[in-house]
Length: 258
Image 1 (cartoon, helix red, strand yellow):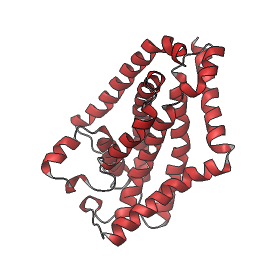
Image 2 (cartoon, rainbow, N blue to C red):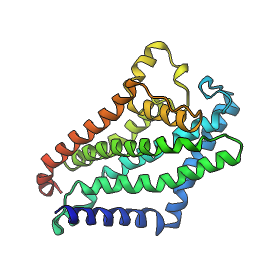
Image 3 (cartoon, rainbow, N blue to C red):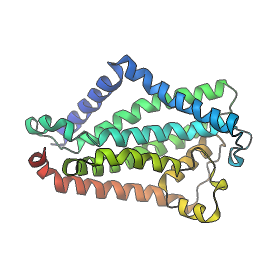
């Protein structure tokens, strides 16, 4: 069953990449243009209109500070949102082919991260060409970190895609929740700007840790890790394991509700 599952997973990832990006010129262009447009809007509003200064950015500047965190968030958010309907939109496939149904949301997450990784590398290259000193050695720890972020997205994808089968309102609830999560994560601002009480609460936001580590690796060349840096990776692995058990517990009942 495992070789079959691996083969199906590769086919599902390949299909998602082709249909969502490669076979659709608009979709592939939008993959790069949407984050760039949003990045340009945020940069204009915060640097030109509000003339914001981010102490955490130092001499790097606001745009690189934003870009290095914004692209991984876009991959994470899009992966979770796309995967939420992966089971309900493939109801016919579940009834025809015998394969582990958890591969549906996981393949969507994998395809989304693979495509956004290409865009992320392109953005880092553009930042370097525009004068931002990117620490390319930081890619060595950043890539495993992005893989861990992909695992985090996979855990959430398993949860929301399973819930979507039984509670169709998940499709309407999830987008505003992701928007709220975006603005409560220090992507548009630095954590040092938060009041002390909120800074304490922010420690329980795993995305804040991912954002901070990526900036440290790629912008500041800071590769130091403390024992507390093991908390989010451990929580990510635990979440994925629990989500997988949750998905497999209810997957036998999917066909009754699809």
